[in-house]
Every structure is written in structure tokens, then in C-alpha cells.
Length: 373
Image (cartoon, rainbow, N blue to C red; front, side):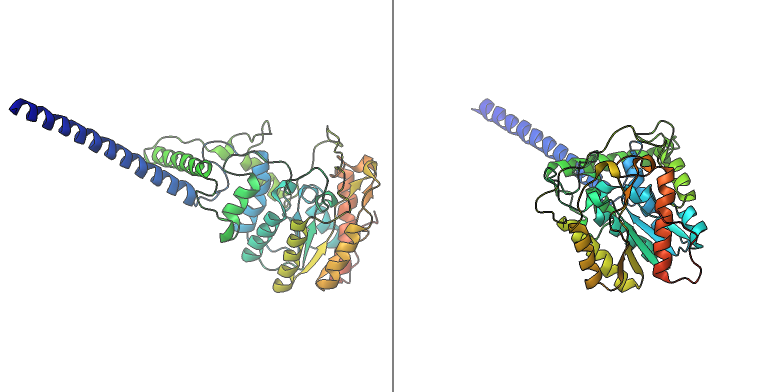
């Protein structure tokens, strides 16, 4: 009887010891997970949009360089261009200044980042700079109307590296508090992302503290570029005042417009976004000029009524908003890089046209030297 009791007590002790060890291991694991997740979700480094464990992509650079300039520079500009890649690669601030005498900067990024990101970038600029005289909102007309086969309003997903696409990460980092979603916003996917991010940040910090050499990901080649790093591209872009010229006269591919939905209608989030720009212009006392980017003639005919009517309605509702006309410019394919972007000759024409429109708007006594398109 004594032997039996002794064995039973020994078994209980082993079970209790196992449970205690398991509990300690789980608690330690949970604490570490919470620690790394907290670091990953609250990292406040200068380039919060980027991942610490790999070089940036070319899309990340295109979205980040404008807002980094907006947040860190203090140069005064008379005119600000903001919009998608048709803006970024279509309006040359240095040429614009030579034509008008007005200093400008191009905060354009790319279409899939979305108009909410353009708005956040401009807000960041206004918070750190004197108010410009005019903000030119320039987007491709193809970004405005609903199409039949594009259920995602932001277009194709840009390389998913978190629990969402690049525009979601951008708004999560730089947008209003309502956009800064919790670590459980996408369940275990977002939780794993922030945990892995926190581990990478902690590893880099530890290596730096111990005197180890940590590679600067911003000096490594961008995904999509052979020899261009984030740092070199940023420096070149800022030197050109945000302008990003496209290489060669024409792109390798041909962009075909998607069929428009019937009846033609403006995308809801685009309409809402432009109205937010108009309200911002009213509250900050600058003129908002909407200048749609040119399209190549090889895509005509296209919308001729919906967009003009929509823009006319905006002008009526918001007296501080002006629209450049004709609303849709059709350019010869020889001066187009593809159907929605311009080559160097097209940039000269479009910048000259925009210069004349801006000069007319601000009422300068000195007429622009720009020639009609």
C-alpha cells in the first residue's frame, strides 16, 4: 500500500512539472510574439513603409519618394503637381519654371496607389511647407470611369508583402488614424506579418548594437531596376523636382483600354477623392486646377460626355476649382510612350499646355512662353 501511494505521488509530480514547463514555454513564446508584434506594428523609422529585411520595390520607391520629400523638405514652391504616373512622368517642373518663372514640384506617384494616397501626400506637404498658389491635380482619364472587367477599384494588386497591397500599407502608415488598422485586421495573416517585421527590426538593432555590419537596403538595387537603388533614385528624382522621365521614345508593350461600363459613370472613390481635394483647397486657400493627362490617338474614340459633365459639376459646386480644357487631350502616338504616358517630346507639349493654363489661372502679367499643343 505504501509503495503504491509513493508511485502515484511521483506520477503527479511529473505531470505537474511537465505542465509547468509547458506553461512557461508557452508564456515565453507568447511574450516574445507580443514583443515582436508590438515592435513591428509601432516601428517609427524614417521609412516606415519599407521592409527592413529586403530592398524596396520600384513601386514602393515611386510611392515613398514624394511623401518623404513632403515630410522632410521645407523648400517653397509656387505650384505643386500631384497625381498618378501620367503626372509623375508627364509634367517637368524645371521646364515649367523656364516657361513661367514659377517654381514647382511634382508629387506624382502611380495609379494603383489611389487618390487617397495622393491626398495624404498633399496633406503632408501642406503641413510642412508654405501654401502653394496652385495645386494641379493630374490623373489619366482612364482612372476616372468605371470599366466592365475591373472589380478592384485600385487595379491590380501591387506586390503583397503584408496583409494587404501597397496602397493599404501606405494608408496604414501615413493616412489618418482610421486607416491605421490593428494587427488583427486580417487575422493571422496580419499578425504574422507584424511579428516577422518586428523580428527583423530587432535583429537589425541587435546587430548594430553589437558592432556588426548591417546592410543598408536603400543602397541595394531596387526590384525592377538593375543598378538603381532607392537612394540613387530618390536623389535623381529630387534633383528633377519629382519628375520621372520614361526611358526611350516608346514602351515595350501596348496599353489597351478596358471597355467602359454602360452607362458611363465616374468611379465613386475617384469622385469622393477629388471632392476632398476641392475641400482642402478651400480650407488652405489655394487654387485647384484639374488637368487630365493626354491619351494616345490610337485609342480614340472614347468618352466624350461623362467626364466633361462631371468636371463641370465640380467647378459649379466648388468655386475654387478650375478645369483645363479640352478635358481630354488626344496626342499623336509619336509623342506618346504608351497609350497613357508621354515620351520626352510629349512631355514638352503637355508641360507647355499646363504652363499656359496655370499662368491664365493665377493672372500673371507676364504671359507664359509656352506654345499651344
